[in-house]
Length: 403
Length: 223
Image (tube, rainbow over all chains, first blue to last red; front, side, top):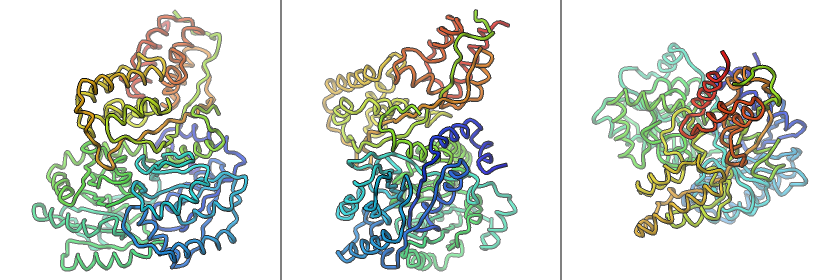
């Protein structure tokens, strides 16, 4: 069985047939994806799955990386935070570092694609190399209230693209180019999301010395302040007064995020002395993340800002009840009280977690609804379809396109 | 009654896929919503009145159009929300006439309830106008008779059913859905064609609609 055929039991043969129809119309086009890291974080994860699938449909998709040193990634992390609306001081020197590294990348990287698909701000400047080919900028960041200085700086490049792509309607800005709404997705067959045996789940719990003696609340996220891990600790402490439970805070780091080690230290410090808190730095082990999610009673995603928050879809796909902040793309994934619970504060999150721990039948129903919602809207097959439509839209400006 | 041998023209099944295009336009008040509704591209009106059909195909917990949902859930105006939710879309043959109806409902409500104009959506809760870009492709499936038609109806995507029932009638202004059109003109079964065209497809999930259409055809075919 070929890789693509493995999705048929999940989404049905006709959906795969439709994808083939689209892929046929992209024959002869080279789609060149460019970003800044091949491991860690949502973008690399999606590209790692998306590129082989596109190739499986005989679409010539490729993936190149820009290079950047420590200083460059410190600046792009500042950009990332500023675009999320966090107050960050950015100096002229920061912009100079960004432009200098970008200039070197322009010299070294061949932008050969018929369609050059740039992911996130790090490689945004490459558009200055554009010739007759088509260019798309894919923004994975919540830019609903961006820092004006950074956004203004990036706009100078974004406006040169043919189209931009955002993950939620609230992220759209008035731009002189076409902008599309495409949510990211999860891959139901990846190690992070595939079915696991109880034995595998138990062995991961044993490895990290997590007993199954009480309810488990889990947040899976990079150690990043915007994911509010310290807020999660407060939620856990408020819940624990009324319902005995454990907390798992687990995640890896991304090679383009220099801040994560510092945040991890802060979290470990704040968690010290409580044997029911398990802070785990996982070295890109997707099976273990999958197992921890499946072992959980309730899953939290208490982010302060989110590009999309794919961990929510991951949890829902496992039919888990989820409590998550009403930010970024999360409300697209959770309809409040229908496929999970949305919250706006630590108190709200604690209240919701307590509700779910005390009402397992309600929790089960939310999880099941959530799984169906993900099946219909957030699987990689839908994402693949929309990316192929996006590529085709570059050659068809009209609203009703006959292919 | 229909013949079940070879019919005159085969039915060629198409499929429709769509992309959501962002406009950057947003409304924080009912007044702004109304003004933007009057001027946005018809593809926006189409998107916000039809999105729910494909996104919540399994079960719709939301009112059947985005305008009604926002007015009720964000602006807290249940009365106007109900008026917008209950607009009977099947009565309209063009997006232009549907837009006029939506505008008329909001305008007359605001005239009777001027205080409704001063309500504000909080930051992050604004109504964002999105438009729908449709891509229409022929599939490999063609039906030459009703038996073949049912076989294919059973296996095509819900996107294909959506295209022939909803998009063809309203967005492409064909007056009726493609299935009724073929059954009427090529199969020659007027009663069966009318029964399908008289369905209110907006009250079904897409899978439910598939079953309903197949049921009507099976019942109308000679034993």
